[in-house]
Length: 191
Image (tube, rainbow, N blue to C red; front, side, top):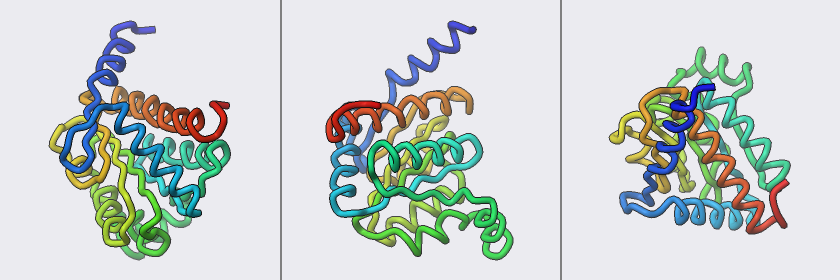
């Protein structure tokens, strides 16, 4: 167990920067905005779509399931092997998320992107596709403060950490914090 590692993650989390568009808001305000939008989405029967690459893809799948089962929110992710390989081969890997987003998302929906760098081309294209469809976009990113995802999202959570492992660990904590806040506020408590 490496205490400095835990301290570094805790420090990154305590310095998480949240923006609504380009306006800075507190972490608490950002979590509240996300949970309020999720509640409205839930009432309207909308969908929360999660995407990411690598470890972020597994977090996207995990959170998609947790929101679906525990939050009673309709969720979607496109991490099925057949989808990823077919779209990557037949269209392009850069469009692996955007291709499905163009078909399934609309104005009452939310896209959640999880990207350590915030600059993955397929995540950026997913954000652009979601905006074309009128969906609200939440981004989680790290590494460079000037990353593209952070500049394009409607609600952005940026963790100022420099390595993939640290950013991924911090993102997992943030994602669970938002879901637990939603469960506390609207679903009778955490499970």
